[in-house]
Image 1 (spheres, rainbow, N blue to C red):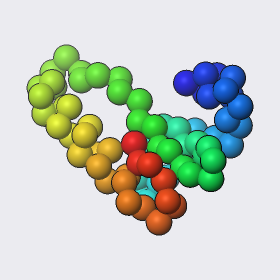
Image 2 (cartoon, rainbow, N blue to C red):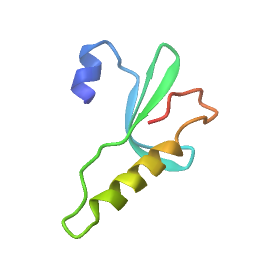
Image 3 (cartoon, one colour):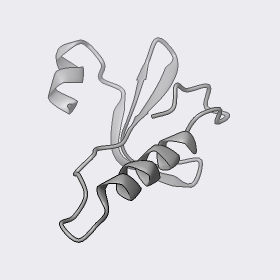
Image 4 (cartoon, one colour):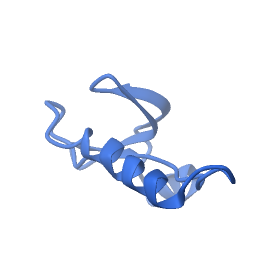
Length: 73
């Protein structure tokens, strides 16, 4: 992901950073706006996939409308 973004001229990025008190895998800035990225490693074998996906979506919802004027996850 980082290689892809830098290849498109986005150089203002950070890995493993707190955004609004929540840990995100990648944060990058383009055209003055931030975008937080959550990697999806998939559920562990003992985890219910439906619950896992629901929690991942809930986690991404926490990243929208933050004062950083970003796009969220």
